[in-house]
Amino acid sequence: MGGQRKTASRNPPFKIILGSSSKARKQILAEMGFEFTVVTADIDEKGIRREKPEDLVIALADAKVVVHQGTIREKPTSKEQAREYIKGYSGGNAAVVGSVMVTNLKTGKRCGGWESAEVYFHEIPDEVIDAVIDEGVTFNVAGGLMLEHPLTLPFVDAVVGSTDTVMGLSKALTEKLLLEAL
Image 1: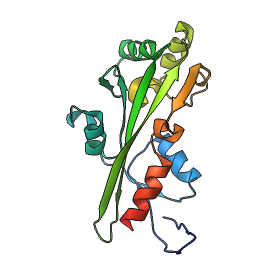
Image 2: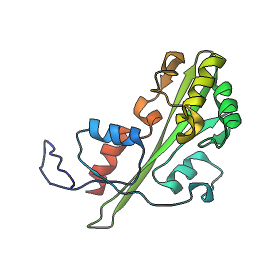
Image 3: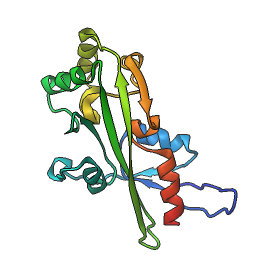
Image 4: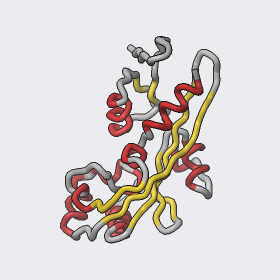
């Protein structure tokens, strides 16, 4: 498998391996016109710690974290924690910090960076919070909430920054780093 991407200036074929099983990252990469193979590492993300969200996402290399009132929020581990997270966003905001790391496997050149975006929310009713938690998707995403989820999307007031950054993969940063790595 693998794919080719043609650019206006040159047509070098190259294969892309996505080191993440995230549905959102797969969708974004496909939207960008890339074919890719998914190969994930079995690592303990909770075992990698950094104080600053920008440092943490670079250390995790393919990760996204949510920051709410100065506290890093990764995937919730219980219904109670998920409820606390989502209630905290209700009528407020959260920042998403995501990173992209591109490695050219032929040359070994690594290019990485991070980008952030802010999401502002209307009040989210308790019954919506309960429905999102009961569905279970909240345990698979940083901060416990998916921007694009049909239950929560109506309560998004504004996004400052790019929506794809919030979803887990900045298109602009990915394009920039792919070009740098080549």
